[in-house]
Image (cartoon, rainbow, N blue to C red):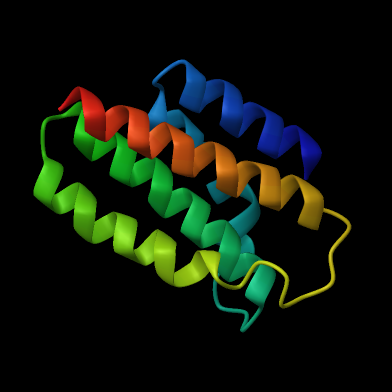
Length: 106
């Protein structure tokens, strides 16, 4: 999972939001039908990347709707056991900061 998170962060930092989405989708897609809090959190991270792509395309209102999906899933952090919870927390903080930066530029 660490390599996926690392790749996701690189893509976000390079404004390659679609690629970031694809990176985590490799993990989420095969397990998308599971009722699993960790997979739902990952889906939230994917939604964050989609929101950023929409901002990049100048579609601020649709990006807000997608961001709400991210917010719905981010609250799951800490509700499950995972060796990656520390990384997920870092990623959550990173995404919140990145969103604030992108919105300020609008």
